[in-house]
Amino acid sequence: MAYDIGSAILALAASIAIAGGLIGTGMAQSGIGAAGMGIIAEKQEKFGQVLFFFVIPETLWIIGFVLGIILLLHIL
Image 1 (cartoon, one colour):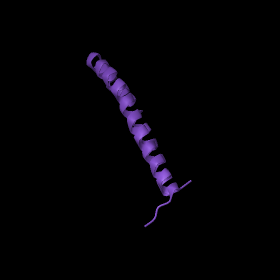
Image 2 (tube, one colour):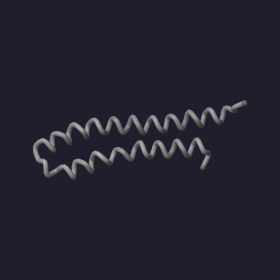
Image 3 (cartoon, rainbow, N blue to C red):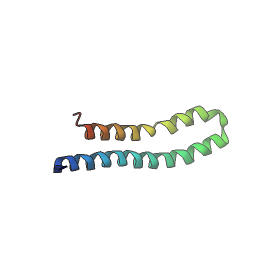
């Protein structure tokens, strides 16, 4: 089975998109997690607000994953 260079470039672009989203999420969660735990330790009633800020960076990996799937399936 022969593959062309275009398929290889699309696979590489998809992997970079997914990896970039995952790395960005990890970097954002590390800072937010440390600060959020400090806030919760002092004021437990702020848990809902801190949880909201924990969830926001999760959209980065979802966007990277969707972009990778779009690239791999040649949707656009």
